[in-house]
Image (cartoon, rainbow, N blue to C red):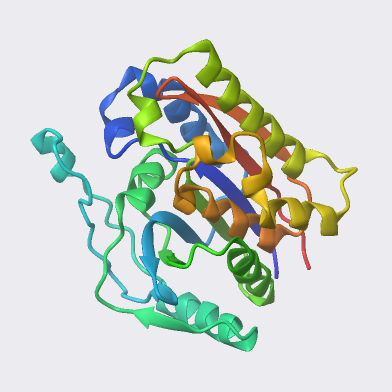
Length: 269
């Protein structure tokens, strides 16, 4: 693995971050500032919470279209464009290293980017001039498997790559629209504190950190924050790839809930 930066981001609600929604203001500001923290990548490998398959799939089209995989928004939400090219050769290499690690993987030539890809990338890299490939989650939602997927990506031989886990460290749809009581705020905060310590504390041994991430459901109020874990698992892939404590952690308020972003700066392995 050469010169790979890794970032886990909380990507907000649907297309709302692109339309000046005040509940996403902190997130928009953070994502716009993120490219200043890392060198401009030659390509982006993105794991979105919005693509689940029976085995790992990797987009391999040279010019993927967009999936407007949300509903009930004004017409401009369905006119968003993000014409970044794909990177078929990188997709093939990702498939190869996953198979080399005993993880079945297939190339996908038809599916376009979902909003977990183009919404944050529109904010981060609006020129859409960086090749992008998307990696699916496996619908078993097994945390150990997603850690293993990340570890397998360490075998990539691709210089100046940015790997993004696009999810949400808090994702309880009912809670987003329920009264933000002191009790609910405490549950949210205690899980975020656990997550921050788990991924930022350099005094935690890596086997213990890996164990904590594997058994994340034992964290305080884990199932309140994630009734279903698809928005957390991109973080498992990121940590599996990094294999160490994060270099930066940012706490961001999105939709009146505390959420996290983590960065691992480039290290040659």
